Image (cartoon, rainbow, N blue to C red; front, side, top):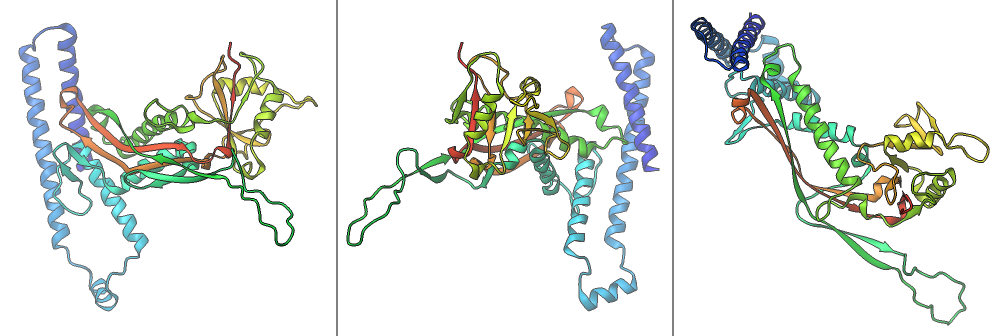
Length: 394
């Protein structure tokens, strides 16, 4: 019965939207018949909502009054709670997902396990849903997933040993003679935190469709939006905010401002020491990858090949190629390819992604808002493991 009532409510709301849209399109007032029809729809929708509310009330009563079976009661007395930790986690995830869906759809439920935490600005998404969004961010943004991550509040100083100016000298030495001191320098990078937010508005008509998986939709939409933003900042950065890979110093420059040669790609790869080659990847735009597909080595073999075993489906000189829309295209002065071990990039989150549902704020747009807030920073932690290919200027 519940499913039929929800479908009937959705059909009525769709009909009401059609009547109102027609009036707006024709720029006129409601006719007497239309006004009567809308009044009837309003009354019927209210009755359905009240029926659903009563159904929830009785369900809640059943949950609080239902007694366990005798055998379950005996087990509880003997060994206490028989649920495993894994089963408890699954039950919590199910309850929170149901509460989340109910809140978005506007289904009124009583406070019980899994109910959303209400605030003045909406409701905070349950932990299990937020974790799914965070996982989606990592899945969509492999650069973030491969970076070295720190989850701490406040500023974070990361020391590193700089051997570019001097290094520890090792040499043969005679007895009773003093060693000559030669040291590298300890330096550090400081990661702070920059606040960023993402807003996604969902059509209420879509929400009212009971067959639509609204939870997965919100997870994917919010996760993809945050991932695209973070990926841009890690690759390109923003002046005065997150630096990401934009400060990379190890560069191979092409001989042309408009073309890349096979030799230059090989030089780029070999500019990284072997210690960092094992987990290294190439990062470039789709057009740059297309240009590299035509390159051959001195023996006439293509440098870039499709490889189903590679993490991103293609391999260049035996290393995975990740394509990002955020990477610059081939053009004078552009850094068109990054190469190296992305764990040399440090990323710090001051707090996990905080996501809220805003039902009332966008009611006049017949929409529901989902907003996500997070605070993060990113800088290069180890220059030795990263390199870039830069196009010649002019």
